[in-house]
Length: 391
Ligand code: RM4
Ligand code: MN
Image (cartoon, rainbow, N blue to C red; front, side, top):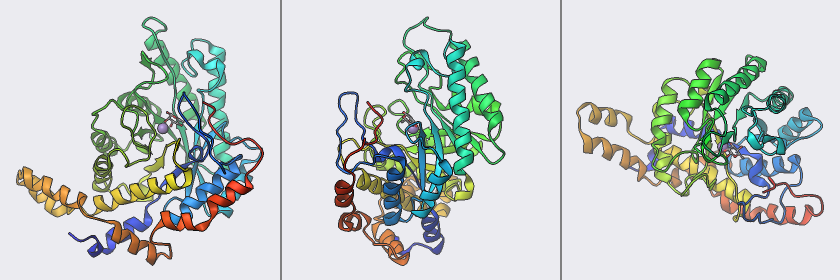
């Protein structure tokens, strides 16, 4: 199969693809051992958005930036949204952060202390106020809540407290807004995690209502988990709200999506294409949730967006009719070959062609490198406090 012979439908789907980038990818990050500062790192949410706008400028498919509160706290959110618009991007999901306060040692919304639960809920509600100001549709919730030792707290009571906070937040969101509930197998809690898997997230979302949907962070599973099954299942139920894309070799590594396992990314995108969920109207939000600890951040984000785009192009090239015929005939090897044929296609010439048609440089990595932006921010952003998540 030659990719450049791709149909107009495939090309249109690729042109319409939208990927959301995280503001925190541009700040300093690291492991619990060391955060390596980089020159030119943003000091303010405005500068993070400026960097995100670069990723969109060169890829053409990353027009949305997620914020994390309080990391991106500003006085005037409407002004921040206007700043984003000036730079050709817009503000996407608001990520709540109830995991970085001393009060949350025993949990946030599931904490045994009602005062701390109230404080956590107030933060979630504040995030909805911010969404109203930025025009954001999605409130993204990830809870670090859990316990470290058997007997430490009552597992069922913690589920009750979680349900209560979610219900109060759900009541507060507008008709056009959604709660996106993320799960994660473990860490920082090592014994029980209160939202450890998609089943738990899905059950809570079902109770809340249609505007509560599940987020799949690709790094939040046990090794060997079949993520594309989860994708297919949630899409079938209309409950897949978003991805947090990244890749991992071990646990929640937050490496560049498609770096560790491009074949898995293809298999995920195949389920997306199969369910016609690539379109923006499908409501599935394709976000990155990554940290670039040792590589330069803006090129790291560009590379990641391109990795998703390449996996998407390959998924779009799957011959759906041939696949369905082979499946119906029970032709195991034939069906597998249809999928592998698409996966093994070099889609880079097609993507270069599409970029050129859109007036973009065919090679976003090289174009960014040539632009001089990295040198400019390193020279300009002197003084002040570099952004980071403070590990
Ligand atoms: C968590 C989770 C959240 C992200 C934080 C920074 O592990 O993936 O989505 O907001 O990390
Ligand atoms: Mn995540």
